[in-house]
Amino acid sequence: QTMMLDRAFKENDLSGVSKASGTRFYSKGLPVALGLDQESLRPYFALQSVWDSLVAIAGGVFGLTLCKAAEAIPVWDAEVTVFEVRPVAGGAPAAHVYFDPHAR
Image (cartoon, rainbow, N blue to C red; front, side):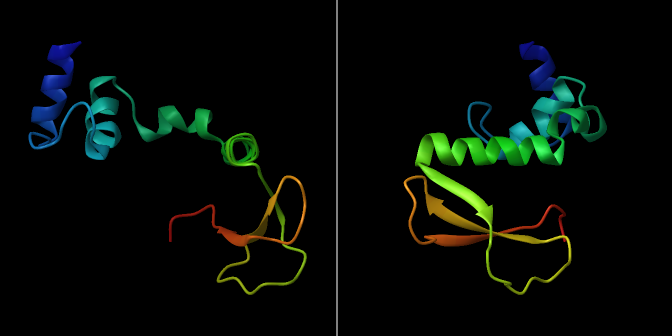
């Protein structure tokens, strides 16, 4: 396994990136070393699944709920959704989050 990671580092010019912590390593080197690509990972990161996990983490870890904004807030694309961030206990929105499912 170490030889696979070393090869991935050399092939992807990741020599200056720490294997223990480095976003370039985890986004480039590790997937290559494991023989993964974006298409093979796509089924595990379906948009609804990722969103549901984000909402669960926000509630469980931070005590927040995310719900669609009650008021009409301008967005830059029809696929962008605005959510209100509220404490689980209730109350006024603490913030708004713009969720854009596409890299633009």
